[in-house]
Picture 1 (tube, helix red, strand yellow):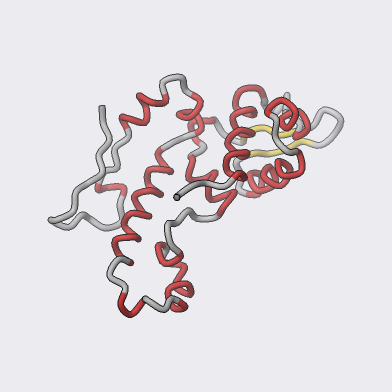
Picture 2 (cartoon, rainbow, N blue to C red):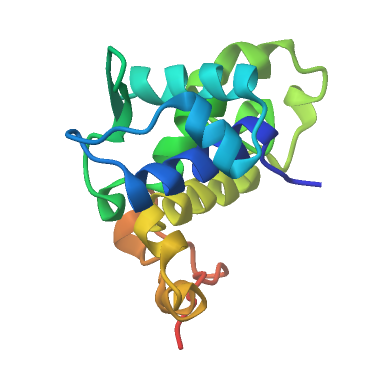
Length: 171
């Protein structure tokens, strides 16, 4: 089953907390986020460090220090959060072009007939993750927003072949 790890789940919960109640002038401490959102503090600290390294959040030190978003929730994509916490999302190791070593180590590569298809699926999932923002996830009308997302050919690196169909999700 395709699923994200707890790290990404905790990252999204922490980012939601920051979007809802933090600013550069009033940051939220990791301890408060952990307490208020019932997250394990040690894991949360590692997740916050990854998010900070990715430039999605910043921190201030001191007695009233803590974390805050570096940009608005509508400018933080699900793809950026996944990349920060898990690295590039992929269905199989050979789905991403820069994972050529994984392909070379694969015993089925010489006979693999699904590699290109899996790469195309992976590219479309990545495009979808880049279209969904933290602001979308926090919106009360998220279902409506998600229904309006369309993955157009302009968002893919390769055009569809005649026998392929585009993934269009519209209302």
